[in-house]
Picture 1 (tube, rainbow, N blue to C red):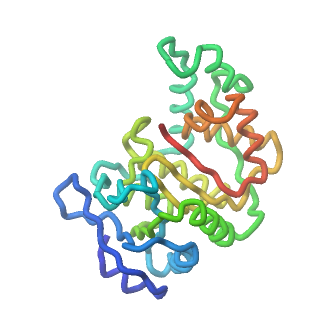
Picture 2 (cartoon, rainbow, N blue to C red; picture 1 turned 90 degrees about the vertical axis):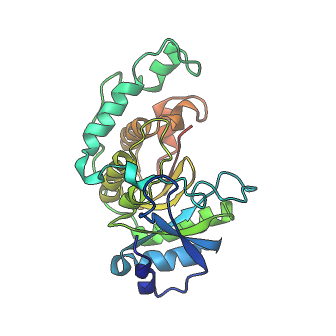
Length: 270
């Protein structure tokens, strides 16, 4: 990221610094991060300028409230040079492949029994149901994103503001070198490709990231159980821990119930 891009931002920025990843040749500056705590109002103002400036704002979360080093961002635990290009990946093929991997019975699984693993996706069996259809926007995506930023900042007040040069919020994840899903796949570009598809189909906006979490606002959430179940299948392929380690019962149908009308999607990779 070129630091000169910051001069295009009209919203008054707090003090901050460019972050250089601690892996690589040292020539890449993955993002700019504020020294001070972020506010949802500042996030929204910078978000509104994103098309003109080319900068995508992220609320950056740390590992815990007591983390004085503000890992992983401030410590440079970012890996942009490791990632491929999101545009080279097909979201449907990615989700189908992940679905196949996560529906295989694993006799050595110490978290779920074979019966419990089968129960998760019982409504679909082992067959990938395909992408859910696009939805008509129910509300302006920017309004939804600003509302969710307000909610997130209140819940995680230790957040900092990050700015990333990217064509979209989805691509910002890769450009920043964020590696939250590394325990499942170490190429963030694949996850960016899926999020880019959600941007188009559901009015998703990337609002915040943590060390292993991703937080999206959704302007076109599902309004019926049938559609929600289809989207739940995508969520399972994208982040199985949401269901495997979520609330009981661990089934797509139970998870889908929480998606109906929900204007935020949150993911956590263990």
